[in-house]
Length: 335
Ligand SMILES: C[S@@+](CC[C@H](N)C(=O)[O-])C[C@H]1O[C@@H](n2cnc3c(N)ncnc32)[C@H](O)[C@@H]1O
Image (cartoon, rainbow, N blue to C red; front, side, top):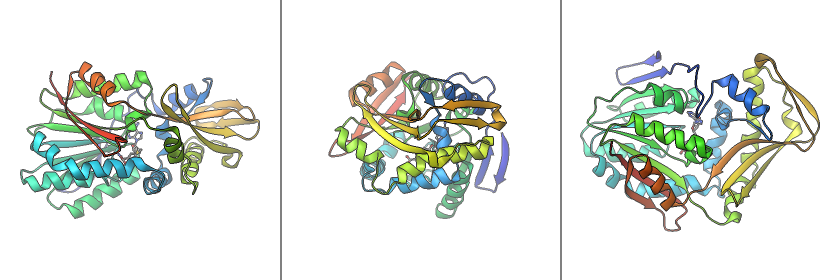
């Protein structure tokens, strides 16, 4: 790991690239090439998150239609102290930490216990990770922070055993819903592998609910989600010297009731040839053709509990809101 920034209490490091990643995430260029040559075309959702994408996501979290963030925050607000009591002192490892806004609820609860703890935010978006780590350092002066810039896959492959009495990996925002069934399975295998017996995993999942509520959440009236989706093309243009014409695509988000997932697409308004120079990639996109940019699967608590149990991640407690719209499952590694 290459250290980018270091003070007594704060360290930001870059994770090593993984050349042979075949599972959850391929190396940056291979996954784009593969996705754009599939039918339907796909772009992995991690490409949403350049600095602009991270900022747009922050705006999405504030939208009246986007219930997941405030619902998950309300569950945390109600139960963080119970969570901290169950786990006791530990190292807190957050996957996809973003602005670490909801994390502050957890940090406050662990802070109150007065036993010391460490926080490791991990995110592919370097800008927001550094900015929020610096901010947190000011707010929690004695907190040890070790931020890692890289993907979930890199982090779970490169995490070394903790010196703290226990570790809790947490994955909020129902980001697990962005994985296909296979990637979901591989991801949980990696979590189970990296945790030692007695360690914890806290998982946020968005639950199944009426289509109208779900579709409104991903098609907000102010068009922020549309801007977030389209920004992915600007990010690819910048990163790979591409020629996507952002004005010739539009945003579409639908709930696929059979698969129980929101599917977010960019639809081409005309026939066009897309060139990504740095990847030596040329593809044709037809008028009306859709590029899948994100799935967001909606879960059932019992099925998820069974899945976690099958990975030796024993659910200790499930926390939900009054509408049963969202759940946090706290699991303990039993092997
Ligand atoms: C939907 S946001 C969730 C942020 C925050 N955890 C929350 O619950 O509000 C997803 C975050 O994960 C990061 N991210 C997306 N894909 C990633 C990947 N493959 N590896 C690491 N971070 C990723 C993004 O940069 C972003 O900050």
